[in-house]
Length: 392
Image (cartoon, rainbow, N blue to C red; front, side):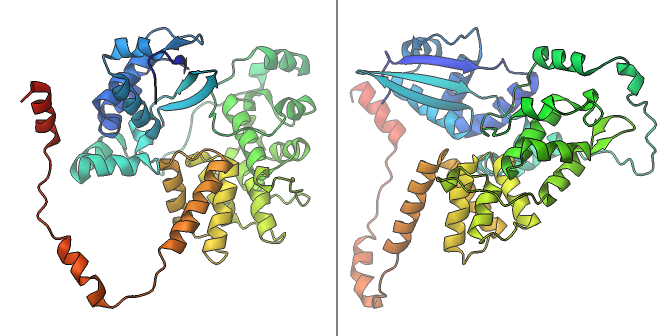
C-alpha cells in the first residue's frame, strides 16, 4: 500500500502533443477513468526532474486521497501510460514512475489489447464513429506515376569516413522503444562498414533501430548484418530498402545458434529452433515472433516462456490466434519478465488440473442450486456511502 511519505521520482520524456492529448481525452478516458486522467495530467505537465519528492506532492496537485491515487496509478499502468519501479530502503519505499506517452488514436485502434478494451468500454456505435474519423483510407495512387525529385549523391559531396565518425558522436538519438533490450553492438557494426556499403543518407535513426531490432530478434551477428544491409541498399537514391532487409533477415540461415545456460535468454528464433530439435523456424512462425515482440511489445524472454507453454499445451503447434490470445492475457496481467511468465504458466497448469473433476449425477447438485436461488437485493453503494457520510 502506498504511503504519502514514500519517495517518488517521475521520468518523463516530453509533454503531450495535440494528437496525444486528443487521444487521452477521447480514448484513454473510458479506460482509466477521470481520476486516472487527472493523475496522468498532473504528472505529465510542468517541470519534472529525476530528484525524489513524495506522494504527498501529487496528492496536493491532484486533490486525491492516497487510496484514490493508488487506484488511479493502477488504471494508468493497465493502459500502459505508467510503468512503476519500487525499491525499499529500511522502512521507507521509493518509487520511480516511467511516464509513457499515449498512442495517438489512429495507432491505438490497431493495438491488440487497448482497441479491444476501448470497444468493450464505449460500445460498437461510438467505436465505429471514432474509427471512421481517425482511420482514413489511403488515397489510390495506382494510376499515377511518382515524379518527386529524390536525393542526389552530390548533395553530400565530400562526405567521408572522418565526417561520418564525427557525426555519429554528435547526432541526436531518437527516443526508442524501451521494452526491447538490444543485444547488438551498433558501434561495432558501423565501425567497419564503409559508406559505399551503407551510405550516410541511409543511416537514419529509424533504419538503425530496425537493424538493431532485427539483429536482436533473430540473433544475427554484426558481421552478418553488414552483409545483409549492404545487399538492401538502393544505389539510385542511396536509401535502405527496409522491406527487402526484413525479407533477407527472415530467410537468413547462419550457423546454428548456441543456446545459453539459461535458455530463456536466447533470441526467440533460436529458442524456438531448439524446441524443434534444430529444424529451421518457418517464415510464418518468424513473423509471429516479430509480432509478439514489436507489436505486442513482449520482451523476448517472456515470448520464449509463452512459446514453450503453447507448444507443451497445444500438441507442439503454434496456432497464431491461440498464441495471441494468451499473449493479450499476459499483457493485461502486466507480465514483464520470465519469472512472472513462468509463475503464470504454473498457475494455468494448476487451474487446468483443478478444473478436471469426476462427473456427478444431476440430482447431486439440485439441492445446492435451489438454495442458491435466493432473491438477492443489489446494494446501492453510492447511496450507502452518502448515508454513512451524512450520519443517517
